[in-house]
Length: 353
Length: 165
Image (cartoon, rainbow over all chains, first blue to last red; front, side):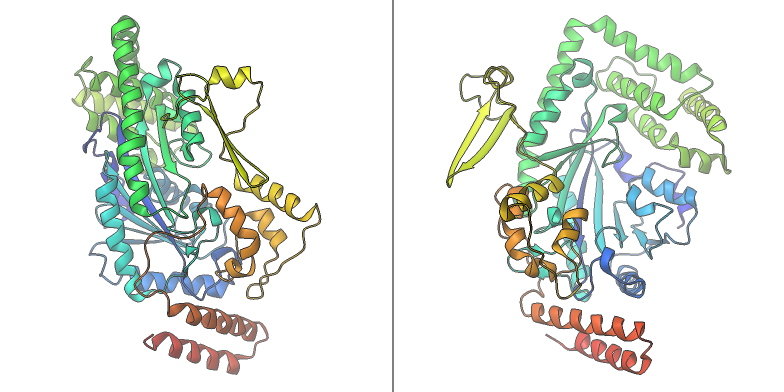
């Protein structure tokens, strides 16, 4: 399995299935771990950084985590491949930065449900990605991966502070639970800021599609925990399962119903305009596509349009991103050609249905 | 979310603050309207860690923070303040005094780990410290091009690592 093969389809997290998938696009959990006895990444010598990569590679690729893992040495990979990993949420933007002269890698599970970044901010950043609201299953999977890694790797750990991480905001359990939510109705009714503020006040972070510092394009929001010390993993999971997510879903659902009852013409107009533009435009930017796909997704979920299904929308969400577009085209494209190729691809995929 | 009601009416509270005055914890929860009425520029409880650090160090030291250095990796506390990143696991011990209250604020009052414990924890801690020291000596040996010493240290490290705990 190579990166070229995985770019042809949507990853597991965009399968468009899973519980509560009308609002919850995906669930993600990541664990931050460091190897005992080595300085953290930022303070390690190049030789030490290299040794950490080697150790992790031996362990991660030992077969104990299953067969078919892809190991990507980021110092050897092309800019396009690195961008591809970010678009598929398998590596962070920080991790793939071209200017970084640092031995580092990312391992990808065969089904793309998990990925392990080596030498990001911490020696190991393990993540599990699932479609829909599946934080419980995601945790079971990541915990098993962590147990396996721990059999042969010694993680930095102390009684008081738990798993020791480079940034003290992750210390303790080193866990970040995050759910990606599609909140178009809250955006349309102007209530999204309230949700953002409330989330922040409850110690939850709200980010855009591509994490830290990214805008909430396509009405996609990631909500994640900030507290990792003094709370068990289970406590955080329960908080998401029984409090945070059900409440946001309830708000969004209420806003969707309000739109249907009070602004149905306006809503239908938005949905069908999105369809019209997507099926006819000749030049398209990513931001516009994300916004139109958002309206289309809302339309499908509310039963207002049946010319397209959710898996196709998810596939387009990913394939219209710059690196994916170039992969599909099989060559590098300048921004202007990308905008044309993007419009072509969308028309093609939507016409086929 | 939004489970708290405003202290002064039945609307959901959207502004929260916790102040500690002479050891007394005072919590305020207000809705938009009452927060505005109170004329309080109430800040969200969550503050970026950089800001926390800067404020905290100022309060603690009256402006001139006494410089603590981690003896293992050489990181100065002031460097940590700049980058928000620690240098090695020993920094948690070296800066424990400064980090304790800071972490408590960053983690909603959390002071001690409550989650998963690695199966190999505990006994391993001293070993971790020892390995960290050995690796530091190894790095120094390589820097000074003392390869004979480096090889010996490398073997020693391997030996320690392969020992059952």
